[in-house]
Amino acid sequence: ETQPEEHTKDAWWKRKREELLSLMEEQDSVYVYDRETLQKYAGFIKDIDAVDRSLYAMKANDNEELLHAVNELDLGFECVSIGEVEKVIELFPGIDRDEILFTPNFAPKEEYERGLELGVHVTLDNIYPLQHWPKLFEGEEVFLRIDPGHGHGHHKHVKTGGVHSKFGIPRFEIPEVADLIEQYDISVKGLHAHIGSGIKDPHSWKDVGIILHEVAEELGGVQILDLGGGFGIQENETQASLDIREVAAYLEQFKEAHPEYELWVEPGRFLVATAGVLLTKITQLKGKGDVRYIGVETGMNSFIRPALYGARHTIVNLDKLDEPLVQTVNIVGPICESGDKLGIDRRFPESEEGDVVLLANAGAYGQVMSSDYNLRPPAGELVI
Ligand code: LLP
Image 1 (cartoon, helix red, strand yellow):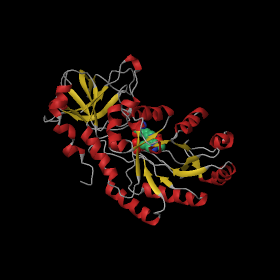
Image 2 (cartoon, rainbow, N blue to C red):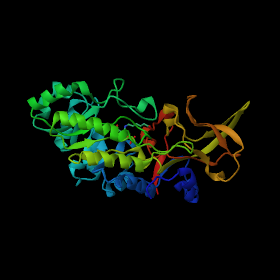
Image 3 (cartoon, rainbow, N blue to C red):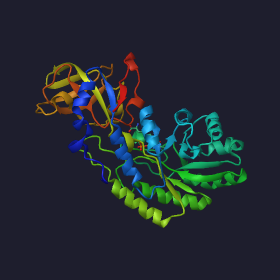
Image 4 (tube, helix red, strand yellow):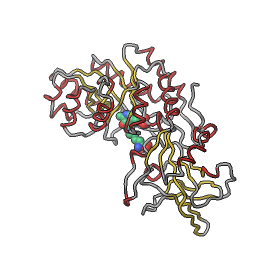
């Protein structure tokens, strides 16, 4: 297999429907992650020959069982905070520190100190630490996060390139960076870029590579080009999927042109999104004129993506999967905000209190972004 499944045709949660329904006899709301699906998606990335190392962006989902599964697949970890770095080291004390890339943004000085002390790769995404704390990095190897000048992704909140993004070192600062690293005997082991999340254009990573390569040639001595994450997935049946074979082909071309550099990538969403579903139960039904509401036990406190980004994830009534879709409904949670909608204008079967509702492709940026807003505990997690 070389292409992610079209989830609407062959979603794992359809095959495992009975198992999911029986889990819900004991629960009100829960995230369920399917280990096999994670392994399968990791396989798509590992099959890209041009890529020398893949680091899992653990911000997407830091469930410990999943981190163990990722570690067994021989992937490294991309960590955005010292908390994430320490969690990986605590779970896998024997891990080669070379497999951990720390990519903080506007972090306090102490986090960089701690990163260096722990012996992981530390990324600078601003010239400020070099200007103001140069002694800290004297004689060290670092990564630099470059802003290629453009962002990409499913929503403006997740585009991380260009002047309106707070991430990365702009190219016009490279000469000053070069002077500082020379002055303090710092070596730039790798260049890093991550221009956004939920990207479906297969040439995006090669485009970033071309820019990183130019900067690497300007600086000299660079060994690694890390093209970031951002590999998009299908959130619902109307969306296209990312053609990962095409990504692979573009990266092969790039690697052939520049074999002297190691290529790294940092997928987060792509590995875990499709592997996760959020299950919840219908609490109440309401009709206001023509507008129908189906209330479920959890909402934006468990899954904020629809409210925050207008994300549209497939939602089904798992108890009535094969019944005709006879009504258009809004699926809403119990949180005290009008934006607490998991789904707007969805075709749904005749439904009743207690039915299990499934929100698909929710394994990334779901539980990790949940809160206990309104003192409503968010959904827990299970791995099957
Ligand atoms: N590398 C870096 C430096 C990142 O900042 C990120 C994500 C990734 C890798 C992984 O990106 P991915 O492959 O998962 O797209 N909460 C948003 C997504 C925020 C992404 C933050 N950075 C969402 O739910 O769409």
